[in-house]
Image (cartoon, rainbow, N blue to C red; front, side, top):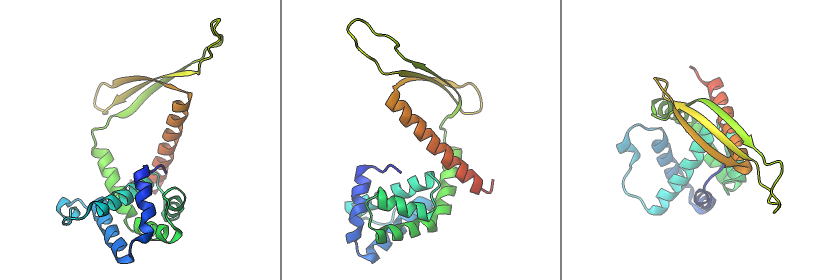
Length: 191
């Protein structure tokens, strides 16, 4: 799970937070991530530090939900990548476990109602220079991708782009993670 540096910094600072304050923050996170009631989610005024911590924990929970993590996976990832101590990671993972089902349902609802176009077709071509000019410049392979995105109701929108080998490897790994997470969520889904 890749978390922004600001989220990792905020998560690593949770060890110094009193338990009552951490529980209050976690209840705000739970309401923000699982409640449809916007007034309930915006509870009073708070300091920027509290908002930053709520944002960091929310980011970690959403990323864990996107990947279909259970509480054990969430705890291990928070310790390894989130900069949390074992005790804090345990508390956060327990809280994540309590809201996981509601979070996944809300994420599914959002995904299904979102106007985001779906990938309906794709093509990829790799260009590699076998020989170079007299100056000896060697070039990296280049990848040309073409995606057709559609909303399922009509014509698709074609998106063409290029990437180098490192960007292609990152794209492939991100797509694999998304497929694995989708398969895990679909396997647990009641649909």
